[in-house]
Length: 264
Ligand SMILES: [Fe+2]
Image 1 (cartoon, rainbow, N blue to C red):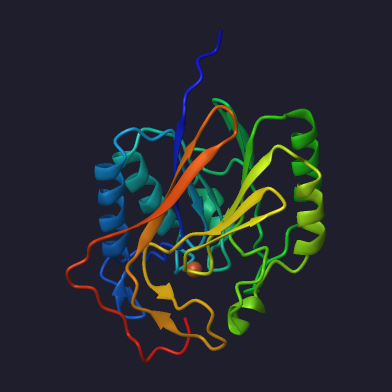
Image 2: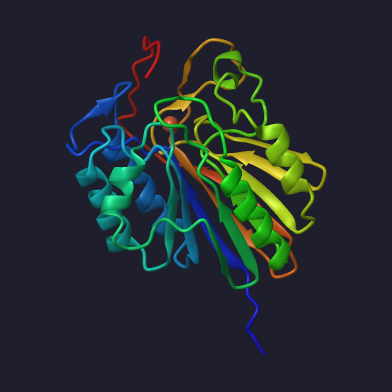
């Protein structure tokens, strides 16, 4: 008989790294905050079954940045790591760098299954999920009925923040209608919005996860940085489809952001 156990899954998102580790964005050294977040993940969670990375991995579209990301993740963790691109990523560079099969849209581990959909649109900031990805998801979820976590880079629901809501997944009404046809979907999670949120809609828990670097202030109509600390999300996924989740923030001594920034 197969062994059942609770899975520990970590979500990291929006690392915004550069090949040159001294580079900063919005006044924050993104490699340094990423490293601090990884250390906290290792301290808090000695046993991890999966790490999902929900986009905006590199700020500079550089294959070397993706190679470095893969190297750092493989040095620090022995669990599978899977990624999807964000609007700041270059999918061709990610694929060229991807020697470890980080790209994997549909898979299962233990009693749960995972769907990681690319919501990026080349050259655009907003999200859109291609029909082919939705068809693949539907076929997978029809044939495989384990409790399911789905993730994107972009937000599928409004964040009540006018500037960021123009970037929502444009076909999310259709996408969510398709997802809600599958009763075994339990969790939808995303990055992009650099802030924590959680909301239960028709039996699915919707949530966003803070970036490992700078944060956006929730519920603002104009772009505004937040002075909340970088973070990540953890999940404990039980065999019966129930779960617990939470966001952890790092401790950073020299926390710095450029509050006068008007965009990124
Ligand atoms: Fe981002």
